[in-house]
Image (cartoon, rainbow, N blue to C red; front, side, top):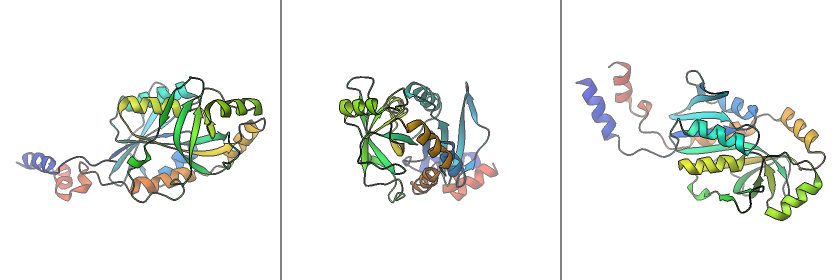
Amino acid sequence: MRLGLLFFLLIASGSVASGDTIAFFYALDGDLAALKTEAREVGQPYAVGARRIQRLALGSHTIYALKMGSGCVETAASAQALLSRFRCDWAFSLGPAGALSENIETGRWYRADRVIAWQRESSTWETDWGRFPATSPSPLLQSTSAIAVASGEIFVSSSGERERIRAVTGADAVDMNSFGLALVCADHGVPLFNWKIISDRADENAPADFRAFVESYQGEGGRALADIISLLPANPRDPASYPAIEELLRNP
């Protein structure tokens, strides 16, 4: 009888709300550590080869977190490992990028509006920020500035290469993750929202500047992302949203 009532309550809960399950792809360990100050770990990480997918809970939302790796191919493999195993409603990503344009600032966050695979001619992907699910997002990540990101397999550290990529793509910044991630999210039909923090200027000083940035980075992106996730709609499938269902699950 109680199980029958539980089934009825689950059916009566209606359609699934958006934003209930999130894939979180990060490049810097500090962002995951900061997110964990607000979210709790659920169980042991899932092993997929050498990759470890961590499951977190924040409010009524489930988060699957995975480090992207170095390069678009490695990032695509990581994204495929996660999204082929877990159905996600949204994908959020945080990571650094090198500046190509003189008009963007190091140490500042930007929304990735367009991604160009600069080593693959005419391969581009655009973000539909109109679908962004949070109604009142964190000011840190909801910058009024959106940028185009050139994405490839190498760390750009010369002024000549920087100028060439800028001329070919018209992009504002360059990274090693975004296009591989965008391709896999598109294949799985998961909307991706990607933020970049400018770590260096993709010139001869980039290796030293990037190392210094990583050493000093405090995970402010992860903390801001926790604020965003906390504002997502409640998940009607989560028993915590329905006290009667939660009680039945605890005492079948």
